[in-house]
Image (cartoon, rainbow, N blue to C red):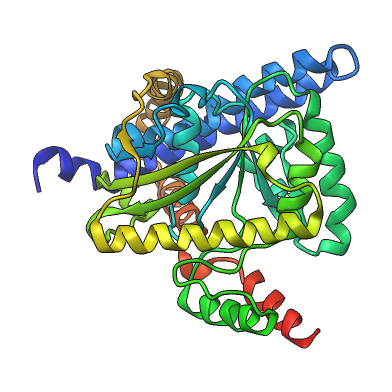
Amino acid sequence: MDLLGLLKSQFLCHLVFCYVFIASGLIINTVQLFTLLLWPINKQLFRRINCRLSYCVSSQLVMLLEWWSGTECIIHTDPQAYPKYGKENAIVVLNHKFEIDFLCGWSLAERFGVLGGSKVLAKKELAYVPIIGWMWYFTEMVFCTRKWEQDRKTVSQSLLHLRDYPEKYFFLIHCEGTRFTEKKHQISMQVARAKGLPSLKYHLLPRTKGFAVTVRSLRNVVSAVYDCTLNFRNNENPTLLGVLNGKKYHADLYVRRIPLEEVPEDEDECSAWLHKLYQEKDAFQEEYYRTGTFPETPMVPPRRPWTLINWLFWASLLLYPFFRFLINMISSGSSLTLASFVLVFFVASMGVRWMIGVTEIDKGSAYGNIDSKQKRND
């Protein structure tokens, strides 16, 4: 390991990232709270401001992937479709297999300049998580309970509110509903056989209702569906901890632009279309494992400097008073202050580990298992 690699793996560096992210995030959440005063006066101004505040938070995580880790992402796509990326609203359908696939989706949005306004379909519990969840609340993220009887109306209403959104955005959706594991895959394929659907080797059975209502609610506002299939070279199994340690990964992302006019409006036909899409995604993964590449032309969108500039701004603003505070605590020689310093260090350590732990595959949602069992019993 070289000197830079050794530095990146040090826990003190991780604490610095954690501190800057938490401190800046809470400041931004506070500013967002005050922007609520703008909502009844100028809703579109409120939205534009919160897009930029949201970027200040989410871009810090993208910075870790692109600048700290140096992870490379090659996009394989049609050269004729490429100029449209970032110039239109799009529904992004991304496979859900890796711990950092959400981060790669954010990186895709950042490379094309739409990260601040981009949306996800997220579980409702995340709305109560400080920083990220609160940030999403102010940017009108779409939350769901993942119980369709409850979600049908609320999700549709949230999506309809985005029809007049003033910024370009990607709406990222993991149609599989939960992260891929072998256990969940076995249960999912049991459901597929019971429903007479073709088996999938590398994906879970897609959840069609959420996708169908998204397409119906955003039709004539969203121009296309971007079918994105992500994989990593050399059987790499990327983790957020690896990114935090500065490990460089090599991602390949196959992006197909499908005009929204080609997606059926009828819910049953839309569901059948989505199942066919996932069969095609499975075939693309099969081809990747066989040849080591995806079809179409490989391209590398330029890495923009704004994520790094944003992090450096917050770091320069927050680190100096923090280190002054620590130096004063240590130099005081008081047993109480030293004990407080150890306690703060311990809490920060646990905080870093908790933030990493919530992304681990084996701690992913059990929703896929529960819902599949319910379907088999229906």
